[in-house]
Image (cartoon, rainbow, N blue to C red; front, side, top):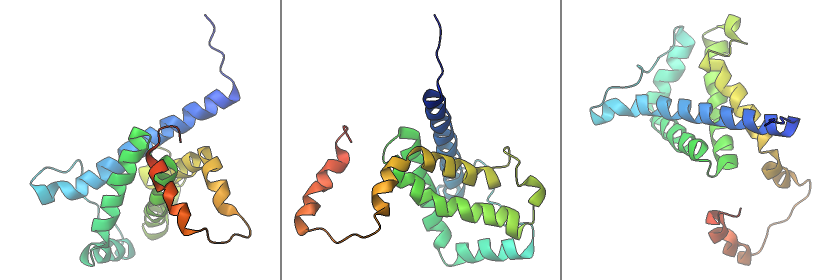
Length: 167
């Protein structure tokens, strides 16, 4: 038996693998933040930045409640990626989070030597997120219509189709 691995199959396998890794990482990151709130041990302690600007950003996000929202989005987006549901939505939901994690790691913590270190999730989460988004580009292209107009109220009738397994 010969396994023919064409470019399309390889691309789908890579995107699927990265989708699962990114989803798992987002779930673990979100869980680690929320675990102590429920009397559980976190998977890892929440880092608060190694340099003053990073620390200031993270502490401020926690103090104003934004971190609660971010960590909830990580869990929701991660679960969508793991279970393969609403993947285009989850990818877009997680992209700003991945970008801020990247900015914090490279810009604020000045870890430029790790810019291409794929084992460092501070940068690789953004790279994975972009690749997964590219894997689902066909779902984003319709949103990039140059000139568009609002639909009608009847278009809301399409909402039940969100849960149609054929989509």
